[in-house]
Length: 118
Image 1 (cartoon, rainbow, N blue to C red):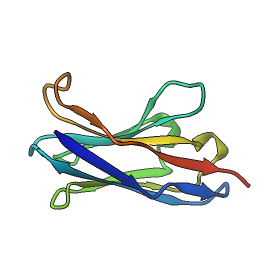
Image 2: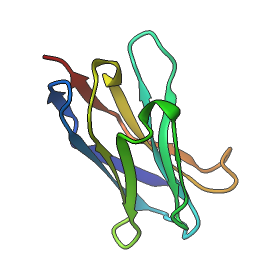
Image 3: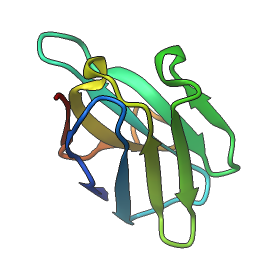
Image 4: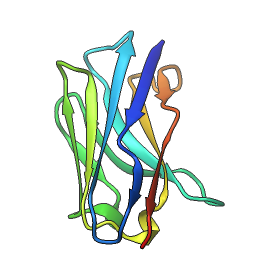
């Protein structure tokens, strides 16, 4: 089992910045992918960004150039730096940890609310 604890959400004005953190604990495997997904009210959960243990990253087109994902393997922690936030970024952000085979090893955090509003 893997436990994920998220922090860093909150209320921010348009154009502002937030940094999300997610710490993983438990049965961590060296080869894994961690990332962030988000779900707005009435919508499906969508990928925001992922980063693999080898450092390769993947971003949703809507956040490219504004969000940066990074990780500290020694701390089993993933970060999401969010800049130039817009109201459409408002959602619950979920941390994810997975490793092969994903159908067996796929874990989610409890979610943290990000609200972008003036």
